[in-house]
Image 1 (cartoon, rainbow, N blue to C red):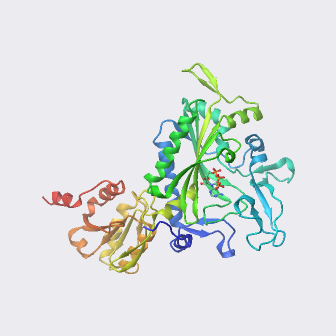
Image 2: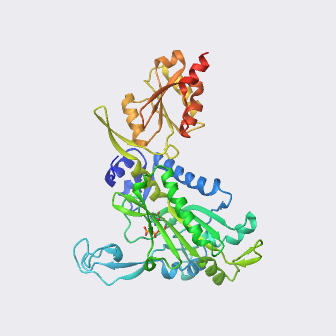
Image 3: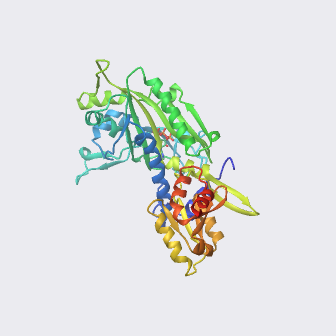
Length: 448
Ligand code: ATP
């Protein structure tokens, strides 16, 4: 497999196969905004589902939440976003392009070589007005992270969930940042989705829990198929830490443009709860009945981007192989992430094959995201399914009419097995879970 893929190839495949389109394309697009097409929306749902399953569903110490994008402006004063959520901005005195000062090398404009202004701090939050009057008092912000919705609901969740610490609260949702230099496809955009967990712990146990979550999150990417060699951990230097962080690790991925952050895992200490208690006047602490003491919990925060993870999964899965002298492009996506799990492909549009193929499709589609395709040659249809990462193709041929068996073709090994139609659902389900399933013995047993 190639260590690195050109971003152009990923962008082109995404457009060609319906994963991701430029936003408002018929109007010429809108910088850094993208739309997820039929394949992209399935992949994105699967990424979020995999995160939710491992963070919420499979754990008894984490609950979910879904808070509003617009919040009381006091939240952003307390969190430090109004004062500190800034990047240093410089402007070229000749061409007037604006740059993030810490993202360019040298002191000249990367576009025209012109002289740059002194850096000024630029706040990344989008501002708008709530209600019909555009005045200072009605300013609201689009949230730049989902985390604050969790902190301000800490008390609500603790009392209603009746859970003890350590307790995690997880949220997936849109965030907005008016980035000075977005780019690299969906890597950095101004509108994106966050998957964030705020894990509240007893002070003193925070370092242990930070290590735990760094490992847990690193392993999540590996479990979903990302090669370990393409991942690395990087601890932030003291001078690099955000205003709220006591310690922080980045999980970096080897993207086509080089090593870049995929997820950050921070020890936020008691910064957020203390700030919100101070600004709101409401006490935000926890009574630990076992220890018989009250304290403000510390927070460990694994914060990941849905779109950025999705890009990493695509890049890592992308491969160009040569099979019997022919080139095939394939996405070796983990089956749980693949947009389509199984494609039903009658050998041709022959009127005798169609009813059986439709019957097979009807059997599968309530259980798996299933595609039905009877256009063009079978070779072309396999190539299309390989390019969108479909793990299994089911072919219905003339023999199927006689013996009521169909062929399953596996995307990665290209192995083909014959399976009785009645067992198809069971076999596909087992294969998707990665279980070995000996269909020949099954058929032999049934024949007895
Ligand atoms: P960066 O340094 O890349 O700007 P950050 O350190 O500001 O990111 P965090 O605030 O830690 O990012 O957000 C956590 C995660 O959210 C990031 O690791 C990334 O996956 C995602 N993310 C943040 N900003 C963006 C963005 N503008 N576009 C897409 N994803 C983003």
